[in-house]
Image (cartoon, rainbow, N blue to C red; front, side):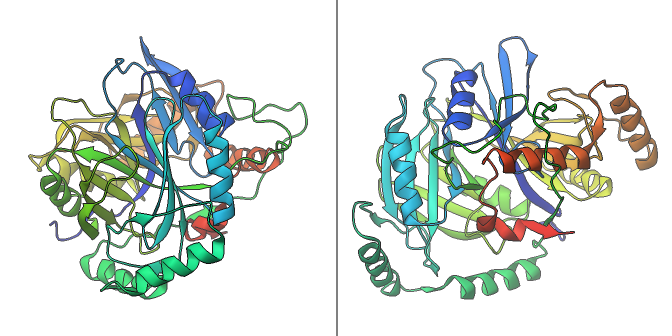
Length: 417
């Protein structure tokens, strides 16, 4: 492991898919996302950026052009939800959607989880945390038709019988100390900017119609919190995310079959003591199947930290396809992990211009010259604005339309200014 892991935090996730328009419709109409930008960076690859979190221009990216018939390597796109009643409501929502398959539920001890596949076959998980920790993977049947009291009592009985059981707060304290000791702890907090409430008929910062009021049937109360991918060599991938990116393993072992996903080995990794897993690896990927991961993006806090990751990446033989660009909105280093999943390490700029767009990033320039050059490029764009203004307007629109994520579920990510 590097003596000092890069100070990075999970930011957003992108995937290649067969039908970007179909997924845009599903994630905006059913799960409440708003389209922050869209375009076609190269012929045949439409790209859509979506968010419910106003300090993230995009939480979820879908990029079209994946050939029909190629299975997804996305193990899950994970969300939190507040309670079992909301989990049942989400289940009813997706049961009525054409193209949604693989609906199943499981009690994982630390969480009750609803699984389903989106219309392009990517698995989505929605979890309600229980307040307990048990060594992962743990998996028991879950019948959401049962009463809350019965589900809670059975979960309590199951968890307390397992070696390693502890309360979630006890696990949080233990993991916080481990991350401090390893140098892997990085602040997850981003300041909350006061919303600018849009005027009726005013210009929107979103590229989709977000609406001027919440719908009669409210969007699901969810907050994105983890991603998972299928891998070929789970041991090698575990070591890579530990050694190079500073993650710690919070659990690993064999998980029973859940719905249409067979019994498999899993590894759970985090850099956040509030989360048992930010990244999940599942064995079983056919080596011949190309990765569905368009990007797993991590934020760093400075250009100097970005340069330090560049040095780490260029000296790690497991990393391939290294490239550096700036998007106006950010300075980004891209590379592929050992199984061809694209990683982005990103330092956010102070400016906003529409995406997708990219220019080469010249690290021979000083930080001051880089910032001045990128700012000049951004200000030439007719839709230029300060990033803080974009976030404030986005926050206002998400609140007004009922699309803001369930912030209380990820409150440690929000820091009051």
